[in-house]
Length: 397
Image (tube, rainbow, N blue to C red; front, side, top):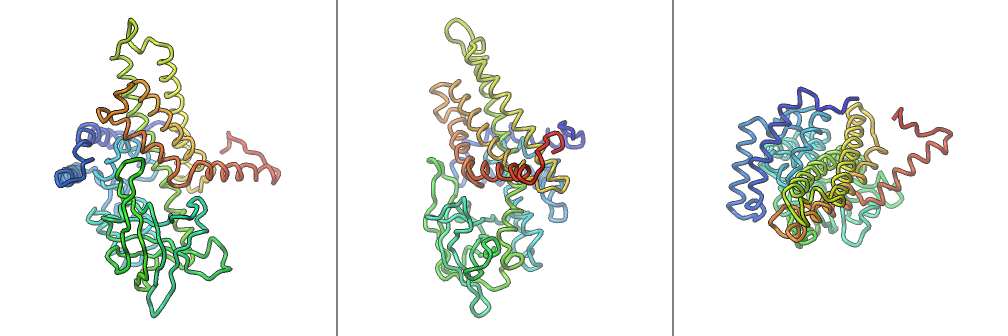
């Protein structure tokens, strides 16, 4: 494979980069307020993205998206990730959910949820994690759904359901099969409109002090029609894994966009700032920050592109995805930390985006599976090769 950005992708990637740096990033102070002015500004950014052919680039063309192939979109997602608002402004926040519905939704579900999702007329939400249950082991999910008179009756409590308070529906992972069923065939995904009686937002949960629309939701005798089941009954884990696998690649590429932005800020600061008789760029300890950050960003980027290449070629790439999720999240934390250190006290304030980026980066080591789970799963898969008499030949992988 080649790690060069394909010539066919370069123009759209450059256009997205310009859109991010010239319009989205300068708008961040207003967008963070979440008020009416922020909503109007986001609506304007979306109109501009649509007018310039930058809307929903990774969504299938038949859904109204840009139809970029997976690997091409990975390169675009890298620059889109420079800002936390990039996905929202460019219509790609819904990509994982849209692809999930595109594959498994019925005709009625597609009309009600999928089509307006791609047009950004509604928001999705996905509910898996529960309070008091180890999110790293989803076979412990306690939320249940029982069929009664042609309706699923859902009982349970979820949390960290992102944007549940503004979503039109939530895809709820719940146990539908009896005790004794194989753990990974005991759960299903049910589409629950958020205005269904019994579906109650308990609270929004700030993450490290940042409001991000992460909600705790109570499902108290929530009744939805039987046809709100997404995909085959008992296949919830398989569907969720399909949603999460490519999604982790998208996450890692956005991590790289954030790391690039932090690296840019750090290097500019080192050249501009003077102390102890010369620019900070001349100080060897500061040069160490640049070297370490360069090496870590490049290593994470190549690992991510190689994992994306394997997925694009039809392989599951479980080892590669597990490895890069850990490496990229750790890299992002380290690079932003060094940039904060270079900025000194200013890096701790709202005068730069680094403090906010730093808090998002720390959360990245937990969401979509904590580092420890990916480390263990990846190591087990590699060790299994040796246990069965093979080796892990990197040159062939």
